[in-house]
Image (tube, rainbow, N blue to C red; front, top):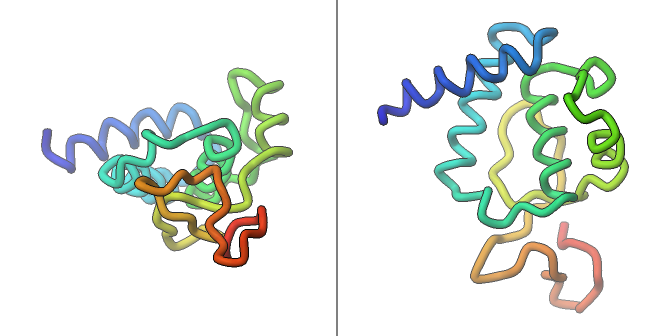
Length: 122
């Protein structure tokens, strides 16, 4: 599949999921999702990272979380509270700065600090 076709499929899905986002915001978010797919980020997603990814997509699309109307609100509210304070995917324009933890062969859910502390490396 051509990357342009993949972006268009994701863009159309995001336009339905994020009706308050601008066309430009939806396009940026779609391109970001396709890039993350090429990075194989789905292989390591857990609940906190999934919540962080959703928040990142909302941020890139220019949608504030309060304007997002999830299909399963109870899961989203819980996800926001427990969203990871780090990423295992590339950062793009529009996303706030957070720690980046490498993916396998390292496990993104374990400490990556040389000092052995339990928090992600900055």
